[in-house]
Amino acid sequence: MADNLLFFTELVSMPVFDLRGRRIGRVKDAALLPLVHASRIDRLLVGGGLAWLAIRFDQVRSITLGKGIDLSDEVLVPYHDDEYLLRIGRDLLDQQIIDVTGRKVVRVNDITMGILPDGDRDTLSVLEVDIGVRSIVRRLFQGALPPRWIRRLQEPIPPNSISWEFANVVEPDPLRRLRLNISYTKLEEMHPADLADIVEELGPAEREAIFETIDSEVAADALTEIDPKMQASILESLEPEKAADIVEEMAPDEAADVLSELEEKTSQEIMHEMDSAPQTEVRELLEFKEDSAGGMMNTEYVALHDNASILDAMSALKGNENLLEGLNTLFLIEPDGRLGAAIPLARLFIASASARLKDLASETLIQVTVDEQQDRITELFDKYNLLTLPVVDEDGKLVGVITADDIISILRRK
Image (cartoon, rainbow, N blue to C red; front, side, top):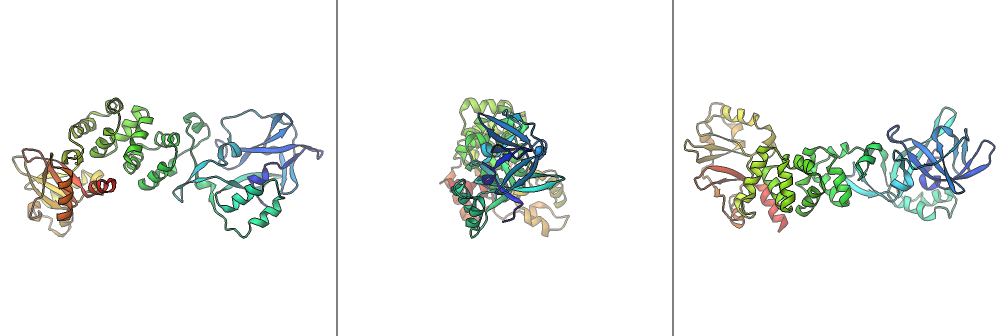
């Protein structure tokens, strides 16, 4: 193990010497000042009798494993708790953090730091969060054996650590999160399903911290991947304004599903904060029974007049780019407003630009009314290998669609 590396378990209890070589105490903790530098240890906290002293990084001359820390400046001040400091021992050790690259929640066993020369002094920089058996061995023998002996003991064990750059601390307190410069932007880059898995491993306060901070669209995508009961718990923990921002980004059917899990008062408070258009859609869906086609359907779809051409379809698709990821069927509406045909989207790419959409329609139009029951709908998807099932009202007018992922979600819950 290189001598330019130092573990937090080795730093703790390391003696600190003044300019004359007299020991003034031992290290009790170390702290980062994230607003100034993301990885440099800014303060060493030293226990000297009844009081703790704070040693700034620029007051350290050298750091030597097995010997101690020599100071270049011994004008020290008492330590007072500072909410801008992220303390290793108090705030990180044994705490849960998020491994952004591994997409999981891990527990911190130790911290690896680098001893870096900076002019005529040594500084400490956090390099990795240690989560494996090696770090457990160091914790087990901490203080019982000399550091170099412990290093020899751990050599046969494979290392298991996370680069500090990819370790995301979760801080529930919004004010302290701001002071510590903690951001969840890296979580926003994850796949919604991975973010959902992480959220489900955290406690209620940590879940709230993430959802009240990340982008509303990202939050909506992740929320749809979470267990319905936990969805309700998360929304209930948020301010109505923030919850409404998230719900507005969800598909109307998914928004209606999650709001139906809430207490009536909470649900109404959230909808009151929503814009009028999405609020109206959600209220209409909430009027249907949950296990009916009306309760299962989504009101986002693309429909055109029955004489539409391929060019009309392409224009409609460009105007609904937000639906393209899950879109596989277009619908034609007859002059009287009734649903006339369903066109598989893939057929557009093998037809001439002048072709009419009705010539590409499925031979049999399979549809259900808003009061059709869930079991019958599941049978239709299975029997006809459907990807999308249109839902019509009593007059035969298209009011929504049920997609295969809706059926998969239902089957998973069963």
